[in-house]
Length: 273
Image (cartoon, rainbow, N blue to C red; front, side, top):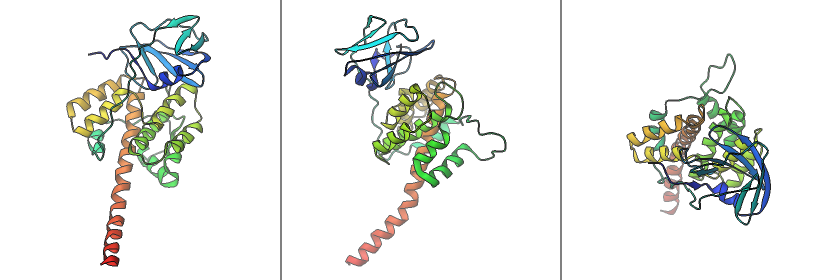
């Protein structure tokens, strides 16, 4: 069943203050608007929910460069009022400590194309692991930003997956993640998606896939993967790949820290005995 019309948090934020801007991109399935420092998309209810998405039964026909105005919580494009829904989509929270990586790896079976060049024999995940060993999340994102093709380059999608998992697991603070995004050499649309990934939100099928893996619901996980595969050329699957690497990395770090915590506990017990 198609979800009812709704808007994401980016749209709500954009409508919260008066401002002016313009239509910055027009595609067959979505038109992108920049206004008051915010970027969001107008699309039909047949498209996925997401933080940047205003899903409408009949999206307006707009032209590149059309003037956009937000006034008193209303959106005007080319002088005409765009009737936006009041319903705001929010992704459901994942259960803490859920073993997501194992099932996600089995369901996803995908590796992004990042144009690494000839002579590169290492997997993308191995290269990301080395980047994280050198400089954590910042270095891993820096390594993939801008690589590959697509409206949002494949590398940006991978980085968005990494950033979202970091946010969901609370591994670093939001300011750190947003600073990483601010330094990304990318365009306004991709940066907007990255900003919301850094806040823990992405397109709905990705959240649904992670939730299904957390519940070990294989049919639902496969269904969500199918929906992700329909988004962009490979954007949806590249997002999920970044999330997979992020969850695997978090699990490895936690496993490596476990003996140290156990030793600390034993030492404390000996000291206080």
